[in-house]
Amino acid sequence: MKSNEIKEAALKYFTIHGYEGASLSQIAEEVGMKKQSIYSHFKGKDDLFLHVLRDAKETELSTKLHYFSTVDDQNPYDHLSGFLKLVVDLFQQNEQLKFWLRMSFFPPAHLEGAIQDEVIDLERKVEGVLTEKFQAWLEVGEIVADHPKTPTLAFFGVVDSILLELVYVNDEQRLRDKLKASWSVFWRGISPRTTE
Image 1 (cartoon, helix red, strand yellow):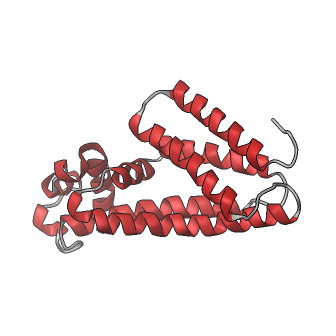
Image 2 (tube, helix red, strand yellow):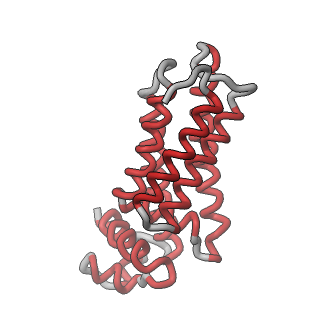
Image 3 (spheres, one colour):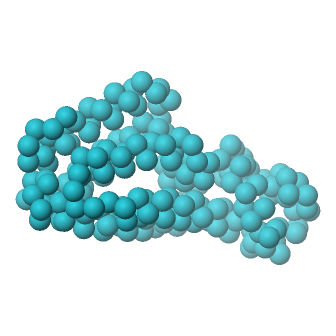
């Protein structure tokens, strides 16, 4: 499973040094092989980078889809606030997702299009599942909205603001304050009753 070892080492170096600062020589040395041997597993640095990126994307997607597969038609307050906590925990604790987050905000210029395609694909898949959840909550009167797409997109706005905080500001208190304020305003906007 040398390919996986190479990807693990690449994840480390791409996360620490970015695309430009990571070298195939460093990665090869980390796994105890010569640089040329990497080419028997990957076409080159771009190919290796995109494999690492897609693995990170798959980790995020499968984690989020698994979370929503456990969500029922009741308690959207708990399920949605739990999802926000999951997002914060994932991006603070999982190295793959730290890498994914950084690269989606700061992609290597020549791979920007490929990375953007991966980000949009993930967002559409999560958006589809989330829209279905909002539709179900609307049907049973757990939330109010003119259309399930409205709270879906607004909720993504809350998530995006938290991701920005995780990328640009390393202040735990500010993150908690922003999350609390954003969540409070969002929930008041869709709640059929006052809950907090």
